Amino acid sequence: MQKGKLNIAFIYDWFDTPQGGAERVLQVLHEIFPHAPWYTSHIDLKSAPWATGWDVRPSFLQHLPARVRRNRVLMLPLLPLAFESFDLSSYDVVVSISSAFAKAVVTKAHTRHICYLLTPPRWLWTDTPIIQNPLIHFFERAIRSYLRRWDKTTAQRVDEFIAISQVVADRCNRWYARESTVVYPPFDASHWQELLEENLQFIPAEITALGLRPSHYMLVVSRLETYKRVDMALTAFAMYQKSNPHAQSMKLVIVGTGTQKNRLMQKAQDLGIFHHIIWTNSLSERALAWLYTHSRACIMPQEEDYGYVACEAAWCGAPVVAYARGGQKEALEEYPNTVYFEPQDERALVSALEKIESIQYNARTYENSHLRRRSRDAFVAAFTQKISEAV
Image (tube, rainbow, N blue to C red; front, side, top):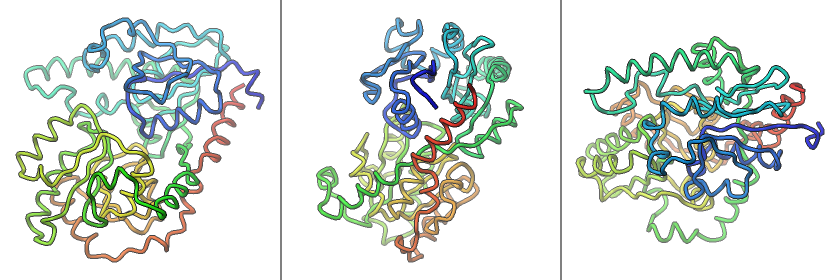
């Protein structure tokens, strides 16, 4: 494919979050098409420094006060209009990467619109309240009903869907009545292997500052949002410590930030485990690799769309305790150091933690061939082929 002759544009929901799994996908796409513009609702480079230097073209929402742009609920009525307002008539191919409204852009007949679907909006298609206030749930239900119809209608504007996992492909079929092919996000195995080899030489300074000892902590790596169920992990950890005297000195390390951090910190206080929790907003990937390698268990209490953390944990040989539904089961396929739990509640999670403590694991027996098949090169080849077919 001659990328230089292809007039292509990318669409993303918003550029205001730290680097996570979705952002890694964007970075790889930017490396493939470094001169392509990125259309979005708004951008905040302080929160998303990874996009510095990109050709990002925000909508009219960029002119709103920052405190309004950061509030998803206040922005909700305006986001559909923001994406429908873009003029994309000059492009041969438009690629939207979306877990919200980016796929709603309007294109002309000569423009091929491919959507790389991170997931249909979780908050829209499940019954989880957007706002934790029972007094306004009636109005929320009315808005949700309207937006569901709008979301399904605008999903028909997409010429081709590519899903990040079979779980997301199933949601696309169930909620949009659209078929999709699966192209797994890129996992840079070589990069993570380099980090592991560096950690054999000396312990990262960030780890030394945290004062951690190998195998004396459990680990959660997650955005701190409601659907990630970190609240359940806190309760289960408290229950686990109470019923297992040998775990009294164990720590729970939580790596991540999000809108629920203050609420989760208060919950840890209420549970009496605050002094057992180590909170850190972000770490270098080298420090994160050390945490995975030496953790007693990496806890994944949520239903993931894909499960990039699962890939990282598996490559680094961490025992994983994961909810038995979601994209993490695809990511952890063939990985022997996993204990799944179901139903998605505290008691089931505690049982899984107790089970994983009783099993001897040997990370060296895992050859990582499954993760190698999800490499960056495999993603680039599959994605560029899809774009070539579009033109």
